[in-house]
Length: 165
Ligand code: NI
Image (cartoon, rainbow, N blue to C red; front, side, top):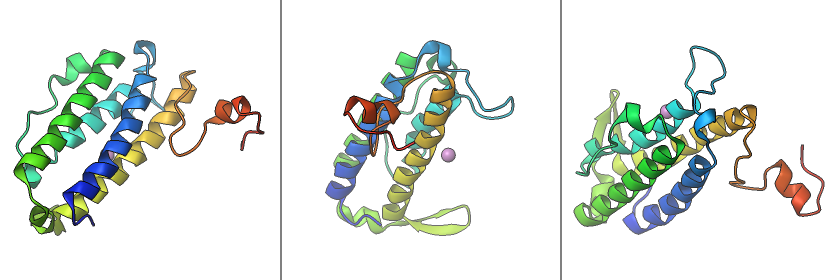
């Protein structure tokens, strides 16, 4: 779990940059892409990542929420903008409203006691989980996702190396 706000913010900013970069690679035409009819679309997953930041408010932070879901989900640029905006507001609120001691505060979530520092770790892993789902859908939509923890297929080729297929 995180015990220092500074160490969380450093990691969040690195991860949020990856998420924003992934959203930047979406196109309006790709937003309805889903694995099948009952599953979340690319715009649904992108909105979920935005709304997930709003859900951190109940940990004890006050910041403006995610905005208009229906309008935002119609535009790739709006999704990327909404993500960057709420991510910035979340970090600003944490830096202004919390001290490191708040990371040890506990809250009951789904019947379990969670320390805020553990919830923050979960939020980073949760974000990576859904980014992975999005990269597959983006490929199916004909898009090239950015390399996150390593090059994508084309990235290896561009470096003159054999892709790790
Ligand atoms: Ni989720």
